[in-house]
Image (cartoon, rainbow, N blue to C red; front, side, top):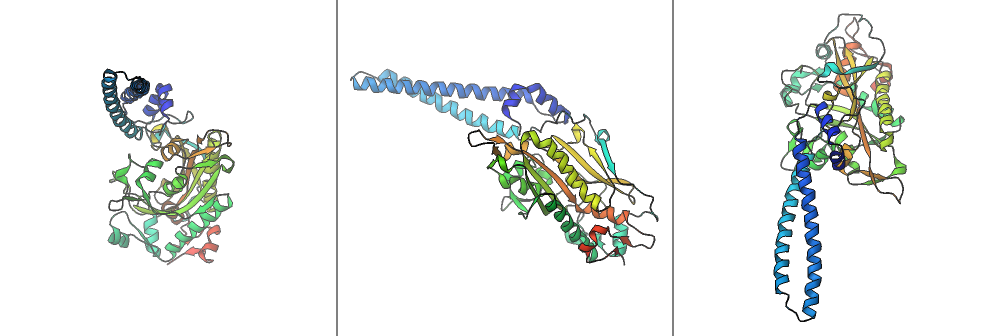
Length: 423
């Protein structure tokens, strides 16, 4: 969430940031409520001070055997007023806390303004998209022909939006996970294995709730949520902690399945591996000092891109415009690969800097030195990478005239020496 002091001090900047994200929010109403709260707190403190003074006066009068009835009556009324004011403070505080959770993060000044994905900015490319040696095919046709993808079984088991990988397809998925984790460990990330179910507080901490609750799978009986990404448990691993500043930057990586209802996505391209309700992903998360976070964002992006370079997959990097940013992000890069069978670019990673937005929600701080006050860390996360679209790209990009699919060289050892997917 945003710092209340920043909202009060520079409301126009916050108002402009909200506008750039295309979000409707009554900031004036929020500020009026905040001003009301602060005035009530001031009045409550004044009355409590007055009550303390009067209590001392009553004690003095009683010691001197003097009548304190009038003062006692006045103090009782003061106590009633304090009780009423404190009750209103509690109510308004709860209202402000609830409202603060739906204020989006403010885009960084470097983020291009835009109202739709067409306004995103391509910042670089890697690799050449060569002409295919055979007629391109969509990945689901390739996968089903080779027996590595079973969409019908996925639909039978879970309904629309679920898939089954068979045989060498399942092996390919496992090989990719192991390769990605090995790369990130070499880059300096500590590998974690985390729960796939988390509390509501964790989902609020990273910003999925309350805004995206309809997209989440909720286990109501237990009050837990299936994670939409490993970002949620990994970021919340330091929830409520004060980190030693000498430890920063802290880097974690984790594999997990991801669960998303994708509410409101119906009618979009959903066939094959492009948009599914359950998918595997390797995630990277960083905790760092505020002054380092944008350098860390660039290195995070490079770490995700290295995976595609190792896999010999051409890609482009897109800087998202303001209205295409997620609710919590201050700046984000998407990494996209080209699927020749679909003739479209596929997002395989998002690398985001949340600044202190998530840290405030999850109360994650650090101390530069023992004598200094704690500060909120900056959090970052990036996909390293999401598997379904990487698999789709590999199938479409490496299709040979014989119908086989070439395995990228770096994956061959992870595939037990297998160089091709074939019938």
